[in-house]
Each structure stands twice: as C-alpha cells, then as structure tokens.
Image (cartoon, rainbow, N blue to C red; front, side):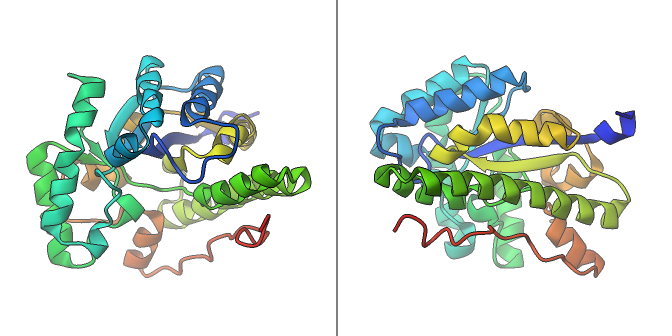
Length: 287
C-alpha cells in the first residue's frame, strides 16, 4: 500500500446524544453507548465529539448515564441545542435561547473542558442572510466554533427500520438493512471524494456525521473496517478543521462561507452530483 493511498482522513462525530431514534426492544440507550465506545476504543480512534440535546436526558432519564460513560471513556461533548431546534424553522432569538439552555448540562459533564463546539440541527444555519449572520455573531460572542459536515450517508434513516425489524425478529430483513447500510456508506465515500477532487484536486480531511442509534451501534465495527479498507485513517475533529476548507467555521467573525462540499460546489458553479440513496425502501421494511 503506497503512502498516497492512505492519504484520506476522517473525523467521526456523533449527533443526538444521549438518545437517537427508536430504541430496539431489549436494548437500552446506555448499552448502545457502550457498544459505540467499545468499537471506537478497539479501533484506537482519537477522542470524538458527541453533540448533545439536553431535552433527551430530561425526557429519558435512563439515557443520561450514557453521557457520563462517554466522558469517562475520554470522549468529548458539544452543543446540538436543547431540543434539536432547526434555525431555519424558528426565530434567531428562540434558537439562541436553545443554545444557551443546553450549556448547563454540558458544563455539568465537562467542567472546564472544551464544549464550545456547535453542530446545527439538520445543518440549518439560517434560511435568510440575516439569520445566518446573526447566528454567527451570537456564536462568536459565546466562544463557539461550528462543527461542519463534509460526509454523511444518512445513517439515521436506518435506525427506525432496524428497531421495527428487531421487534418482529425478522433476521432476514435485518441482514438486508446491514448490507444496505454499508453500501450507502461506501457509495458516499466516492460521492464526497469526487466533490473534493473537483473543487480542490485533493482529499480534504472529512468530517463524518453519525448518530447514536441502534443499528449504528451494531454496525460500527464493520463500518470502521470499511473506512480503513478504503484507505482512511481516523483523526480528531480538531485536526480535521485545521484544513483551510473549515476556516470560516473556526473564525466566526469572517463572513459565512460553505461548510459542506455541496455548498462549495454550488458557489463555484459546479454541478452537484446526485447523492446516493439507500438501495432498499427503508419506510416499507418490517411494517
């Protein structure tokens, strides 16, 4: 294997801690967290960020210990707003209040550690220039950096169907879901790398968006192997965003700029390729 074949780097990030999507029968949120932690430890991954919605810990108190175990494992936490509020669908003032409301929980888990990373729910950074610029001003004043996303294969789409199939004990359908999940991840590697090469003639370090769901926990060892087999090495979010692509996510006094490859393609006037879709009807499975 040549050195250049191993040039691709990827930073895993996790959204919707401590409770994402439907819970498969017979599992707990804490057990899902343990599976994720064990797989990442086994792969010797650097500390990863999990982005927290505090309302989940309040509404599902049995999920809250997952956050402590995440921290005890040496992993990190960031802000995903209190209730996963999409800025594009709400006022800037309401959204700012959601960011601030989430901070008490983050402080209780991290203390003096660095939790000032913000992942926009639904990647909604504001549906008007005024909202987008206002959000950046607010986050800059509060000392935040933005965790952008440059790779995502829609892993969240698979977690509800998986829970349904577990409930029905449909092992054949679960096997189909597993294969489709890995196929989606593999197709998205080519999709994202193609845009990076078209834009910059190289691979940027990718920031991968994942979710703490039941199928994600089941599949993570195989998913990590897929990325390794495709030539990726695992890096931290902090190392990924040292690339110039992410500079406007770190210095929020700068004007808004694309922090997804799709946005960068549109800004450059380049055609955005068709995003890969799951190779099965996820809404119909195990109904």
